[in-house]
Length: 351
Image (cartoon, rainbow, N blue to C red; front, top):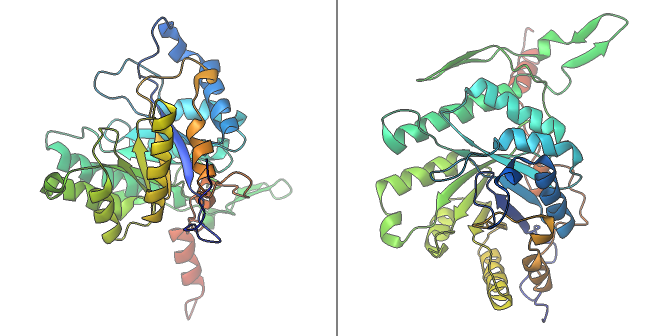
């Protein structure tokens, strides 16, 4: 294999590689159904992914036809303390969990992972209004959650035994969110997490030209463009993602990863690595592999593609100092809206 670095920038943005595991997905034949409920099984997969060079593991939410499985957020939280480098990103379905508790769960995962948590939001069944209503509900859930993330400033915890003060009350802020479906009053019960606001992923499907022109497809893209820190372009159906990729880039998307089914044989691995190189030249910042069948164990986790990618000259992330998922993705440190408003008030004339 010949390394190709002629078109790679001298100081390139790292190209991330992740794997998507579905707790309710099918297991290999002759595998005990109880394996999906074994914490050691999942810990082994995460450890193998981390050792093999993957940057993140996404835990998929339940889907039609899937077997009952572990909750993605709780599973990621159980595995986070033992992971050293890899990021953990559970998928959450809006409309199934109160936004207040969802925000607290994501903050908790960020604490447990020491700043390597993200969250993948899928608009869920909020009501009878169909996909558009689901998107509206998801938008409100994200907006309210981000306010809750900010409700504790970074230095709100004092823990001063001498004075008996645990928090600075001026740095813990009341959230007053009134949406069309829920109301939230008061701060989160979880202090500000290491990243402040864990990166948000949203998925859009790769569509043909005709499909992409539809109103629903445009609504999904607009939703992702407005709220996502990273957009996942889902090409697992086999549809070529180039048209949707171009539309997203023209609309201003800067962080896009493409989700595909893992290749099988050596030739398919090399072909996907070549495609990933072209995608990277078109502004794609990473790739996600979503196997149709869960690995039978850590030894079955395929890492061949990573070696092919680095051999072609794509910039790897390993060896870089990336203490948080935000840093890995090239995101700036999260701002705190409440802290900025407080400081602006303090500095205002007459205060």
